[in-house]
Length: 472
Image (cartoon, helix red, strand yellow):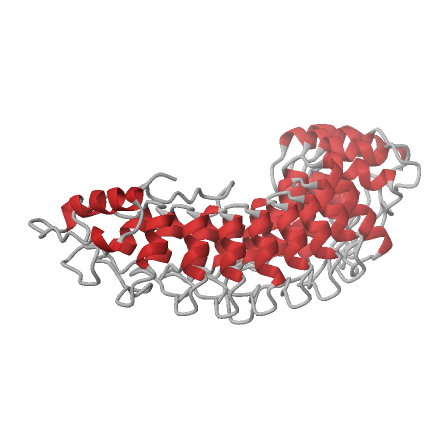
C-alpha cells in the first residue's frame, strides 16, 4: 500500500452489513505544519544516504529532533516511508522516543504497520520500550491494522511480543480477529487463534462474532479454524439479539458450514433468531435441500415446537415449490409423527397442494386419518373445492367417498354446502348411494344446496333425488 493511501475493508458477500472504517488522512506532512522551521540535524547521521534522506524528510516539514511542531517526527516520517537505515540511526539517539505521537496520534510503529514496512516494524519491535498496543484516535492498534489488511509477516512479529494484546478493539468494537475473518485472511486468523489469550467470542457493536461472520459469508476454512478452538461458542452469546451462526448459515444455504457447525456437540440446532425462526425454518422456506437434510439427520431437531410449527415448515416449502424439501419433511413426519389432527396430508388437501398430496400418498401416509372433527383429507378437499386433489384421492382404492365427519356430514354434503359443482360431479361418479346421506340435523346434500341457493349443484342433485323418490 502506498504512503497515505487509505485502508480498504470490503463488505462480506450477501447481505452482511459492515460498518465502514474511517479512512486514514492523506495530507502531506507539509500540509500539517505550515511555516515549520527546518532543523538541520544530519550531522548526527553517519551514512551519506541516510543524511540525504533525513534532509529530504526535513524539507517536507518533518522535525528530526524530538520536538513536535504540530507535525510529524523524524522517526515517524522514516517509519512511514520505510527508511530502515534512518530508523536505526534515529533510535540510537537518547532523546528519540519510539512511542512519540504525531499530530494524528499515530506512532512510528503504527505507520510502519499500515504501510507494511516489515523491516521497520522488526527494528521498532526489537526495542523493549516500543509499545505494540498504542492505538490511534479511532482505537486501531498496529495489530488491528495488520490483521485487517492481511499482513501476515507483520502480524507474526507483533504476536511474537508477549505484551501485544490480541483482543484490543477499535471504536466499533471490532477485534483484530474479527477484522481478519471479515476480510478472509486465513493465515492471519490461524496465527491469532494460536495465541491462547485470543478471545474467539468477542462481538462487535452489531453483536457479530468472528464465527457468525464466517458462517454468514460461507467461509468454510475460517469456520473450521474457529470451531477448532474448544472455547469458541457455536451458539449466539446470551443476552444478544443476533441470529445464531447456524441460523444465518442455513438461511444463506451454506451447506458445508452447516455441517461443520452440526459436528459440534454443544451446538443447539433449535436456537431461534429475533423473529423466532429456526435454522430448519429458513432451509425449508428457501429450498436449501442439503441444509434441511443435514438438520433433519439430527435426532434433537424439534420439528413441531411450538405446536403446528411443522405445518408452517411444510407450507413454506410447498408454496415456494421446493419439492425436495417437502419430501424430506414428510419422511421426517413418518419417522417422528406429530400429534393427532396435524396430518400433513389433511392439511395439504385442505389447501389444495396437489404435489404435497401426491408425495404424501407415495410415502404411505394414511389418506383416511381424520382430524379432531372427524374430517378426512377428502372431506377437506371437497369442502374447499380443490377438484384436482379430490380426483387424486378418489383414485385411491382405500379412500371412502362417503365417510362422514363427527357431525354426519359427508364430502358430498360439504361440496354441496359450498356450491362446488366440479367436486359434486366427481363424487357423484362414484359407485353407491351417497346423495341422500343426511347430517345429524337431517340435512341432505340437496337440502343444504337448496338452502344456500346453489342452482348448479341443485340441478346435479335433483334428478338423482327424484329417481330415488320414484323407487321408494
